[in-house]
Image (cartoon, rainbow, N blue to C red):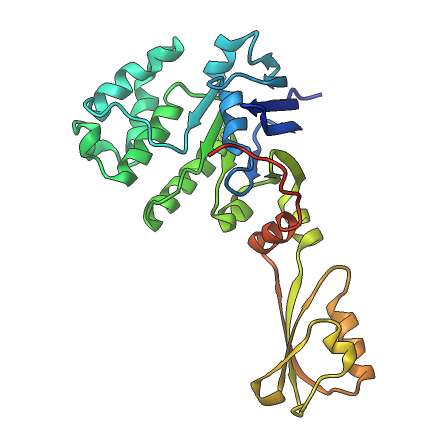
Length: 312
């Protein structure tokens, strides 16, 4: 049996008596790109900080590649790299200076070949001798990724890595993430750009008010909870809709020639066509669009109980 890259069991955390993380459990397979999603205040950052060892665990257990992150903290710190959501820099050091001494925090030697690869792939070369305070927001984020990867962690945690960056940097980052993932680095990703999670992640966990409310393969999650929007073009305009279609939330558009509705699971397009046939409404054309992860996310979180959450 393969040792998980990350194993979390019954993890808890409270702040001033208010629960931020409530007994969550999940594991990540080595080589996986795993998405941890949730609205602001869901408990994602608190969870990441406990994994990284910068926040004390309230209760439960965390293992990184089989090592307990409290008992074997020196080992687990070397195995994990974290790019935090907040930009954390030393304002008056240059990129070159910081990258030279940062690996020493983990007790490892700098690999000059790997260091140069990070600099080139993240476009830091022309900026090596600039002090941090003079860098743009995008360059600061590129630097933070390089810093998180400098000691060659086997598990890389990216907490909102593309927040506030331009489209070019976003694509550059995802190309690099896919590249290092193919080479064996396991990725734990949080993002509010849900289309990114849908494209990047093998599995997704969704947190809400400190609890895990979904955990499954990305495609299966969208398929299970996703709805299908349907546009039906009629051969002959209708002046009104039958009660059977109104019960499905149908709306008449386009001067009566178009019917728009949403098919919730388990109803299918075939069911709709059968109904339209029974109602003797001739169909000229039909369009469907499967709901993306964003629609699923809104659907799964809107009815969750509001009973606490991560501070801030």
